[in-house]
Amino acid sequence: MTSTTATPMATRPADAELVFAAGRGDTAAFGLLLEGHRARLTRLALALLGDPQDAADAVQDTFLTALRRLSELRDPAAFGSWLARIQRNVCLMRLRAAREIPAEDVTTQLDRAQPMPSAEECVERLALRDWVWQALGELPEPLRVTAMLRYFGRQHSYQEIAEITGVPVGTVRSRLHQLRAVLANRLLDEAAPSSSSSRDAAGQWARSLQDAFEAFNQRSDPGPLAALYSTDVKARLFQGPQLRGRDELQSLLLEDDLADGVGYRLTSVVASGDLAVVEVRFLNPPADPFHCPPAFTQVLHHRGFQAHRMTAYFAARPDGDPNRENG
Image 1 (cartoon, rainbow, N blue to C red):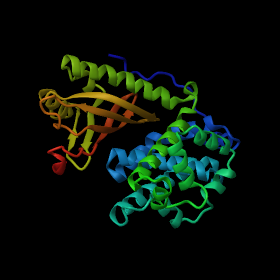
Image 2: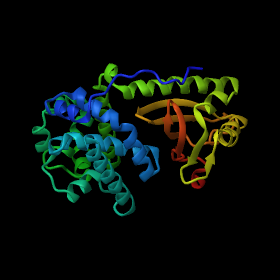
Image 3: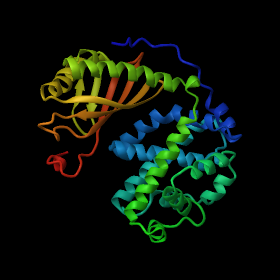
Image 4: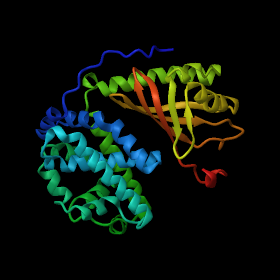
């Protein structure tokens, strides 16, 4: 198993320095800003929304809102708290939309709650505008048309875009979801791996988890995976019980999954400071394909790559799952 001893990491520039660089059109600097806060934003979104997919969408919305509003930030050193406020507003609007007006777009509600210039005006006064237009130009035509109708000009409604493009409203929503994901991920990709401590930390966690999952899946050995948690770890299943200590976590979660023939596959890790967010797919046994939900997300608070606090969030069960109504 890969050692979990912390390795030296490159020093990340301060937020204020990166904000100044981003304001001059340095997209890599903006990517580093977002990457450095992604783990914390994901944790906050999961805590408010509960669903990993909703949380991921909210983080993407936050990134794109930050891109549009960067020129409004008055104190570059306060970028983190400014970003957290955007994140909270995005999450609260999502919750309100789900309860009251499920058919309306969150972006529309945010714009109504805090009047601001049009998306086009915001982008045009950003030094990053050339990057935005280039990124849009490289999108497939259906996504590009939908983006330009929705976010530029007079910001058409979902129904209007559906009528203009000749597709159902659901397809419009799907295309806008793809658009947010593509642009948010591209912004992160602009960050230089060699200068990002967040990527180094994510890589360390990924290597350790991959080795531990191999031992779990192929050798039925939960020990290496349990060793990634401290002996006094506090582990909580979202809206579920709390487990205290590594032994309880191993016996009630890991060993139960082994006995049921369930495995794990790592899909992504993001990290920042003493926080890591881990995405994992369940590998259900062929004879019981709906035993566990499709996936889970863990938020890990750690010291030296050993988690002392963990919260697990489970993906929604798909249509056709007989356990759907029971979670």
